[in-house]
Image (tube, rainbow, N blue to C red):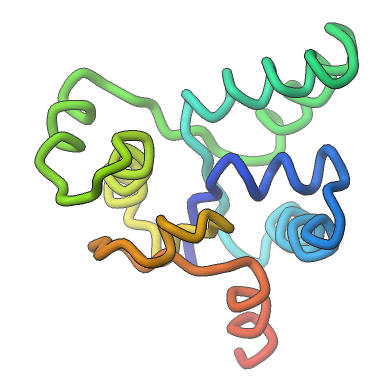
Length: 139
């Protein structure tokens, strides 16, 4: 199985945003243990670095991003991906771009806590962390 993580899930784990951090950390750990392939977008990497640096410091942000890059997979974002995202009927361009990237890696799910994204009509199923964990348990 393959998933693409939305930035909010990764930041929940990194910044220990309660109560969401427990499920986010479990997903990251399960992916790290090889239970499924886990991706995030290249633009999420820049957002994560910026947010973590702002909350902590440059050295910590570099360490965290180095760990994420060594542990999980990155989906590149190209000019063509941006054009494709414009044609997806999702108002939020960033969410549409996440969908394009998820399709590119043939992800089964996009894991997100973004309530609007969860309601959007996406060609790749958008699922909350708790619901994805339930699916793993049911396996």
